Length: 402
Image (tube, rainbow, N blue to C red):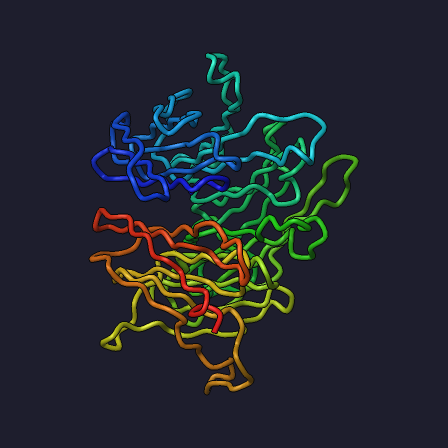
């Protein structure tokens, strides 16, 4: 979803890309991809849209000035088996001169490709792409290093399938720091075994809050493994020579042996929340580095349901999860009292709201704009499902904030 205008982008396995407006009508369909589209991402201002398919085709589109005009394809290239797309675009108020946006992608060969996208790109002036080679294993996930977002020296954190985490300087194309993790919970120490390929599933960093430069957790990263979340800190040790160090400072057990499918940091409190394939939902205090609450979400028949995606509200201590049975669930991020369960954790909360309608697994979630009136909360929730539908659910503030 665009950050500045009410536009959403949905993808379909038949190589078709759909663009829609929050007046709920279809604006644009593209059939330019040769294979199923698996990744879509808007730039920070919503000016550009990046799309990628299973065959490795990556397209960048320029947003038109009016809804009646089509989106213009301004850049195309090909990579290996595409794993992810992410944008870097600093705030114009933080720099003396505007900089081009950077689109990064990672593939199954461990190759990271960097593209410089600006107004001149739409006029046919294409800057050469940069390539950052990994160690030959898939680049599973990536995020831009939070302290570098609003600077002229962006840095990218890449998580590889062998559980190695690297910090890359995009200007020099050199690694600045790395740490070898263990994706299972069998070994709490940070010791990499060359003969073993631990499994890691997701990567998250704190939210870019207005005063993020003053936050203590801005250097944290959370990596989801099998039954465990590794918390890593990447810190600059010497600004004069751009020296950094990366260290795993905590291993948080999730409560089951399943893979951690999604992690997201809170916008309002020093917490992160996670969801696992076995249905465990948990909240971690990122200051004390301990689990505050954890529970298992079950369906109407009492069976556990896999968590597929998780998103925190930008204005309230509330988060939303999507599930393998097609539901979207709202949860309170703060425990309502001091009552504890048998394991000593705060008692599991009741869902604030449950939205149903999908007939298959929900693959992704996006949250709409905040209400302009108090109390602030998102107006809509958008969910994309394996049933080939995108659903838009209205949010009732009185229900979420009761």
